[in-house]
Image (cartoon, rainbow, N blue to C red; front, side, top):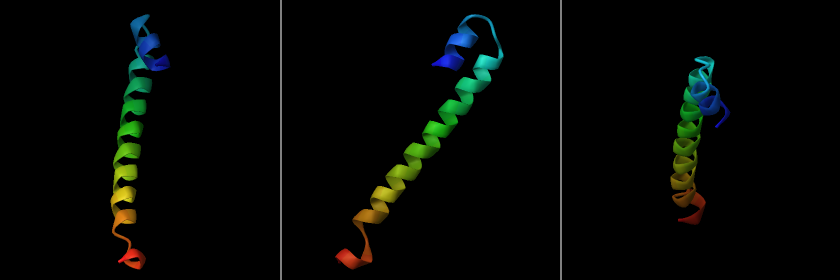
Length: 46
């Protein structure tokens, strides 16, 4: 949000902040989904 606001007000650096936030959130969501799949198929529960 901060990066988008900075970019909206004419600061190019805000675009980099927003891009880093998007990449970080995407990686976090993929990792969380993968850990849920791994946890559902744990060998101890089978």
